[in-house]
Image 1 (cartoon, rainbow, N blue to C red):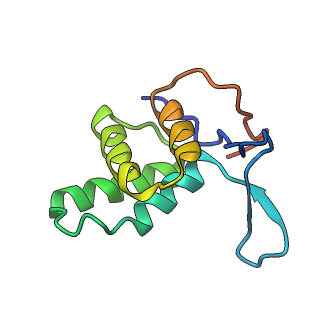
Image 2: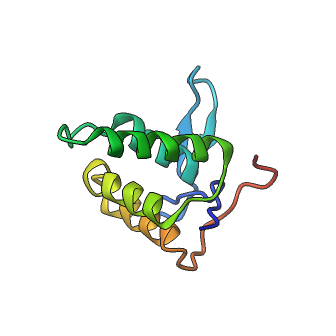
Length: 113
């Protein structure tokens, strides 16, 4: 599936969801890539994951970093991780819409890589 990793998320007030950069000095928009990498690197509730599942998650992380396309199996795995890792219904709903390629009104970062 073609994935637009530069899609952004919104707050409930309709503002672009922002996050402090690693130095904390400036804010940058939260993108699908940001959320996917966060979910896959912090996901640990499923401690019974097989080596195969862990490797699949690693492959998804590589594709997110490279902004590559995902297979259906990879999208399903990312959703599975999000089911547990994302606690905000507002964020989860936007993430699900993006992964389901449902038309959204959310903004795309211009010039994103």
